[in-house]
Length: 571
View 1 (cartoon, helix red, strand yellow):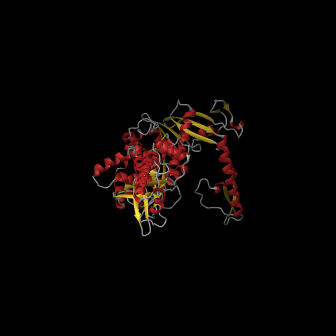
View 2 (tube, one colour):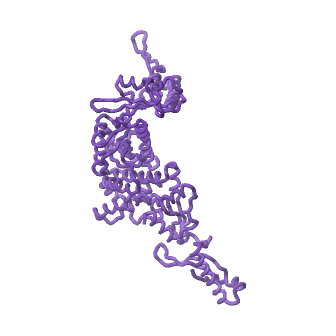
View 3 (tube, helix red, strand yellow):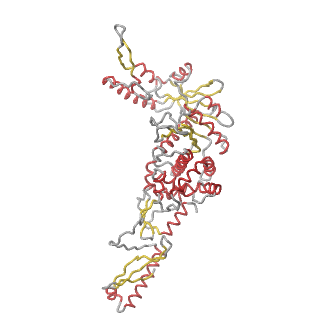
């Protein structure tokens, strides 16, 4: 630091200033402390100007030493000086924690392979990473994502048109990126890939006519728009493994084999237990996952069992406690019991030997009963008001408990009378608390098999996060390769988020994590450094701990921030 002076008509002022290189690479300086005017300083440090200058230089030396030892930064501000046009003082920093896992997964190396293959000039690594960070921090269109990334501590050097050009390439290399990400993920930690969950969902488009794989189908949101379906595998820790897209009008069961073949071949993942719901656990799918070193655990619909097996499943006798194997009759236990009960038996449908496990949970039975009672009350209200739907597409529609009968006195036009169908209510009540699983793990402990099936909620949560927090729907892109790249960025964002969640030991909710990342903002001060604008909490401390860098200082110099950025990239 050095002493500088400024002369006006009435006075000469003394300052301590600090030199630095600004963002444009030009050497400049900023005043960090005002010492006073010459007239003021002569009274205490005079009698001559040289005496004042000698004292001022000694103060500058002390200021330099203090800065080096204590990192104390003094800044002066001018309340009458306006900001420069287009001057940016607010920056986003939450992406630094996402960047840590992006580089841990080696996605920068995958981008390098793609760049060398196509020999283009734009930075596809920066584009892909920014698309992923923006999808998590501020999900929106590709144009808005580009605007969002302009607020990062490391703003993009590419242009918006480069983003759209890169989408074409990312869509073509989707399979390569997935397989390479899986291989690199073993460097982050051991994958629980001996247990794979599969499920499907769909996404709607803001269009009216079918086009390509955008077809009319049964939308999860019950919308009339064309949809596209996505199938995804997830490992036992809730981290996505692979995904594929298929037409909206296709049977989702046809999507499993092509994606699973890719996992077997390109991921070299040969030994695992396949787990899914009943809709994706047909006999054909079970046979396919009975081959090699694979096995399956799938949900079985009790209502779809043959009459003999269904009667056995609903029989209250022969159940055992999951904790001590004590045999009980469900008719004799309390409805407030918290124990899980089960019974199992060999189950052969066609020619595949399986094991059918039936479980009963009094707690789940109470929940289902409470829900149904509310639906019955709504059905009674429909009868009273006469507002009965003609079409009942929703299986949970209260109108399913209403029946109708046509009567006539003279053989002419019949009068339709609606009534509450108590037989229907009693029939549904038989299945309260019941759950069934089919598996080819004939010798494994029941509790272990049930613990596998209980984890299916995680893949449903993956889809929920993509649809709500990451706003992957609706989709506005039209070209097939760009649509693929859109879901690829959502998929990679989900992997990075899930790893972050895992390293945080699942102690925080999705809402807490995302809000904290979005709040990691900084104020850029007079080209000297940054002031954190977020609140330090237990979660921010944990984020710093797992990513091995800190941003929670009162002031961060530019050189410190450059070091933090390097650390977030594992450098």
